[in-house]
Amino acid sequence: MKTNILRAVIITSLLLPVSIINAQTDSNDIAISNTLTGKEKDAGWKLLFNGNDLSGWHTFKRQDVRPGWQVKDGMLVCANPRNAGDLCTNDKYDWFELKLEYNITEAGNSGIIYHVTDEGSSTWATGPEFQLEDNKDAADPIRCGWLYELYQPPVDPNTGKILDAAKPAGQWNHITLLITPEKCEHIINGVKYFEYVLGSEDFKARVAGSKFGKMPLFAKSDSGYIVLQGDHGQISFRNIKVRAIQVKKQ
Image (cartoon, rainbow, N blue to C red):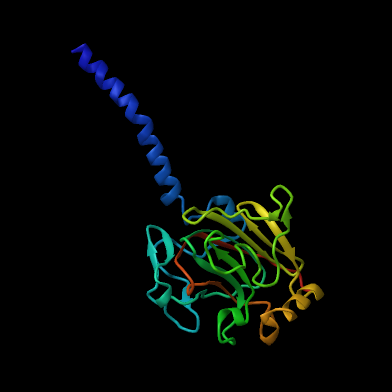
């Protein structure tokens, strides 16, 4: 009798930590995802994705969302790039801070495009793009976190290579994109890549020397949709949050 009781206690004590760890993992990955804390609400953060449906989004130049974009297990997933297209917020934003997490497939390629308007033939004809990709196997030489064809991080003195804080395909990465009149910042997993000023002489010179120099509407609007690119590869997003930044008019 005592032996059986002791055996049950030992088995229970061995199993309990595993159950706790699993519960914590599930809580972190699912229950806490796509929610706002009290501090975030007080600071003016807004969820752009509720984890349940595609409310607040539309495909570029359409009122609906093409079926290539799906909601799976609390994630916003570009599951079929051939039938997805670029996904736009319904609301337009001028100055803001955006935070999100993404998980990209091997050789995947996507992007976050901002200040997008309907006047262009494509989203990137009007909006600058924060590149997202699998830096190891993607064919595009523009790497994750760069402002497409315009800005890239400096050389990391520790490696002698261009700074790269992105995690490999299959792992979650955290992005922060700050867009204000004074400065814009690209941050991956807590590492700041660079900053720039929209409309500055340096910015305009870089645009003129790129393919965007032939696009008369590129980066001309101070307001527009925030866009998730959906025509290059499979990618998942979660915890998509935005905070509008009020700028005093001169």
